Length: 249
Image (cartoon, rainbow, N blue to C red):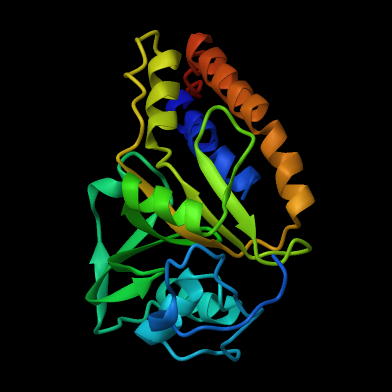
């Protein structure tokens, strides 16, 4: 019973930051035109129509914060309709190790994402991301003028395409270590060493939230994660009560 009740809390501790903390209309670019010129890439509010075709080009648009409809089309096809696409297949790698609710795909042919050739895509809630080395991610963060989110327990960077309602171009470190730390603390073990992540997830969050709301939630994230960890510790410390056997007539 206790283990089952821990599951939502462990998920919360690992993903609360991404869920809680998850912009000017601009010019559309095709996926191959995205570059690293040092200026923030200008993005159309939606360069693809509703029910966008499922192609590498529209996937690039979704990943690059250029099309909310493209993101919705892929999410619907892959997770509701369970459609199989010949040019992408399911992928499970070390990039999302220890994370919950992450669905990876490997592309037959790489796509161009802000000047980088990438062949792996990950979906998690309203995020669509790829994994870049820290050096590549830091170059993109600088080129695209992403800000550091005001959170100590997790590393995330952001820039709103539309400050009133997103989407948000972002980068963040994998959160599997949050789950590992929560488990270690709950069972009285020493948390594993926290080293800078070698890779960062980079992509777009299509949650309909304003920049102000995002910053408000980001300011509360550390406290929420700490509370989730305390709740886990309390549940582990509580003795389990044995259920009395049913009386026999």
